[in-house]
Image 1: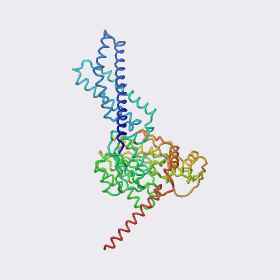
Image 2: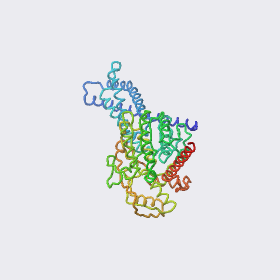
Image 3: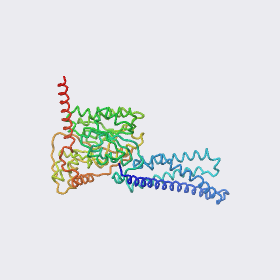
Image 4: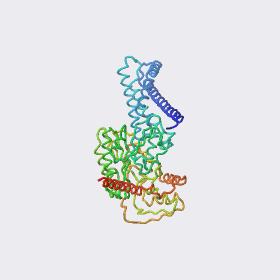
Length: 517
């Protein structure tokens, strides 16, 4: 439970910010109307003057403004509020933000104009001229959009601090189920969702323990359910009351998937199909599925969401099969969205050191030597914080924009050869030697375009490779990671352990049944 005093501080800060935004918009609306009235007055007096007495016209315009200005101002603020402009601003970025503002301003002026000229005109002889309303609409749109775009340029949303007690808004935005919420991405995402004002429920089998969510486990808007997402009863129980689902649970990475192919298919494909069916049955509006850019396989071209899929691993094959099932399940009420993630790096409350950038950083820090294997291969990269941010943005994007869509998640300036990656890390950790060698095996080689998510939603990653390197080094220095070679930091090692445990349980069950017989 967050301390009550902190909640009071939150409440004050939250509503103070809203009041400031409301006042700013009220000023903008009135300035726009006054400019429009002034231009119309000058046009009549200087151009179309036909015996009109200027003081009389001026007085009538002042009266019209005093009578109608407050009504339009209140209407605009109320409509802005119901469009989420005062409560969900972080989700409104780029082209999406401009579209929301256009819709809100247009709705307000259309509603006011309809009432103004059809319902009230008989009672309000001093009505706004139609030209004034049209000019007022245009100026209000320009001023409100311009103010917010300028603010975003000066203070990017990504620069907001991420310390949860300072970030949790009072207004909640619905309940999200995060499947695999204790993992590498999930432990970062849950914190961001809480900061956005969501209620968060996690379904996780604690394969990697619960340490990654200990910090948030007592928050009143956070709920944890231990369970295996392959088990339909666990999924049904977790799905009750949920608005949106983020499915991160999977056996991740080629080596881990190759340990037991049937287990991989059960986890990555069969369970996903069942989760989609349960979600539809419970009326879940949106399901975000974490896929991978590995589905593109090997290519010398720059690949986008329409490129041919050429999986060269079981991991990629199961992700493609799951994508197809989800896209086919879409209907007017159920909206799956596929996220093809670039290769992730950076520190997380549940760290991983079987990821190439994180592994290279650990090698450079402790051994002062990086071993680069097959360095000519291309990979796209993205920081784990940016992955979580992209999910938050897509969760609150308009349904018509994202329904049934596939998005590559990453940045165009983050496509690197593995050898380049090694050199960048070596430059940031002086004294590091880079050793390159070529071996047969991993054939993946792909550069990816991320234009679609920029174009349709306006999402840009904000963390560089250097940011990721610094974050991991700080974790080493602070003692957050004592031994990066420990099996808990490797999906491969833990997958082997899980499979061994399941086999032992099966053997014990078989022996008990045999003894009973």
